[in-house]
Image (cartoon, rainbow, N blue to C red):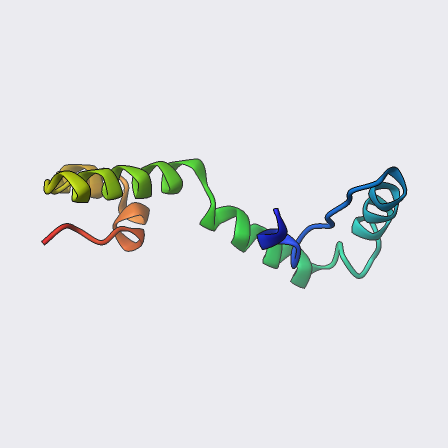
Length: 85
């Protein structure tokens, strides 16, 4: 979770949790720039993207290439994956 500490509050105690919630609801944290930051991180960790990366890694380990039809069906994945050569 510490990888996301730049966009979310990390808490280990009840007091920290309460503070993190209050802070996340502040004008500073709920402004357009911070919202954009959080949305960017969320898009980068979309389940479809993560699953495609795992599939690509497994395929590469097996020495096979994912079909181009998969990448055509999901153009956003094509930019995230490196085909096996």
